[in-house]
Length: 280
Image 1 (spheres, rainbow, N blue to C red):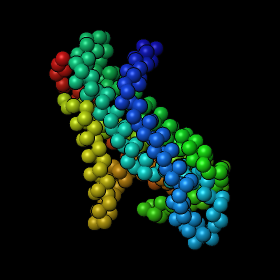
Image 2: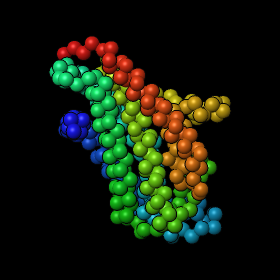
Image 3: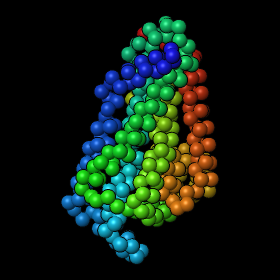
Image 4: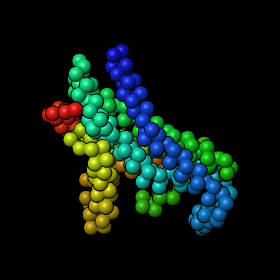
């Protein structure tokens, strides 16, 4: 019970900061803008040509699910890493900067327990951010488009999939469940850097740099044989939820690697925090 009380306190502190809500607000704003642009321009014409060129009817698939999925890819690729890194880098580094860690550690709580509680609070935030992304993507898309099937085209992964509405909604939901692994993993990287004696902004920048460097290396054609070694290669496992059938062997392998990354980030962060001299 004491553990749950301490976790509640960490969540209270996290969601008591205004910056925690920046990601939620930007997701809602971006999704609303994209939905309006698709509705009142010819932006969907490219999708229509793809469907017609492959012998499919257009009307059933210019739908809520298709638009929500179209919005998902750029947001998951750029905005989601930014805001989970912002919060992950803040969890420890901000309290050290404000001078409150010394007071917290004066209480009968171990450093390892404190670090795990803060990481768990960050993981819960990441889950809520992904849920918000998925739910409001459907809400805003439904305001302007009818409910129908799902069309997904991911050229980088050679994915071209058509789903009926029920199967499409299932694929959309499972994709967001797997997207949680990306959000938590990037948050963990920022959290690790935040456990060192650095400013919160530095921890966020280091985490984003780590992600982007991996992304650059992964996309260099000459390094294609080494893709399995790159962090970002495994972050994309959620995209395979739109494949028919789902390559669960590939998903399982990436989840195992990401588990290893997260455990490593947590252990390194805890080790760095244990040897730190916390000053006011």
